[in-house]
Structures are given as C-alpha cells and as structure tokens.
Image (tube, rainbow, N blue to C red; front, side):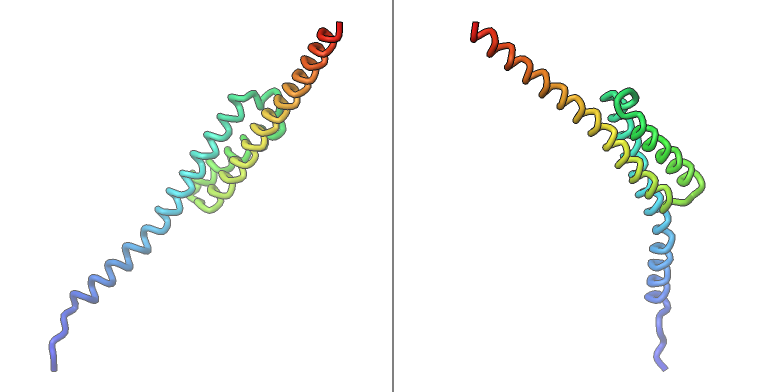
Length: 123
C-alpha cells in the first residue's frame, strides 16, 4: 500500500481556514471605507453651507452617519456599509442642493447685469 503524505491536505485545510477568517475582516474594512467616504461627504456638505441652505438633507446624512458608526461599533459591517452609503448619498444631495441654489442666484444676477448694461448702452 502506497504511503500518502498528509502535507497537501494540511495546506489546503489551512488555506481554506485563512479564507474563512478574512471574510469578516474584509467586510469590516469595506464598511470602514464606506464610513470614511460618508464622513468626508458630510464635511463637504457642511463646508459649502448645507447647514443653512439644505438643513433637512444634511440632518438626514448626519443621522445615517451616526447609525453607520453605531452599526460598525456593534460589529454589523453590512448594516454599517448600508447606512454609510445612504449617508453619502444624503450628504451629496445636500451639497448639490446648495450648489444648485447658488448657480440659480448667480444666473439671476448675470441676467440683471446684462439688463443694466443694455439700459446703459441705450442711453
């Protein structure tokens, strides 16, 4: 009877065990990355003035961010990732709302300037 080495089987078992234990670490790392992105998005929204010009959207983003942080602290990476992505979307909406409002204001001012220039030129 040929003698079989158990080394290949051991290596396969160790490799599979290593793969199994890295999945939660990968999920947590992914959730942490999503959370970092959400924090940055909320900060960008605040920086453009969302607290004054898009408070509802910013509150939603902040609330989701708090939920994401709590979920990650509880070890629920999937929930943390979901709340982080939602916070990012809400924060981007807040930022876009502010920027769109400013663009409308700037366009209105540009129209007024054109009208004034036309009135001056007509005199």
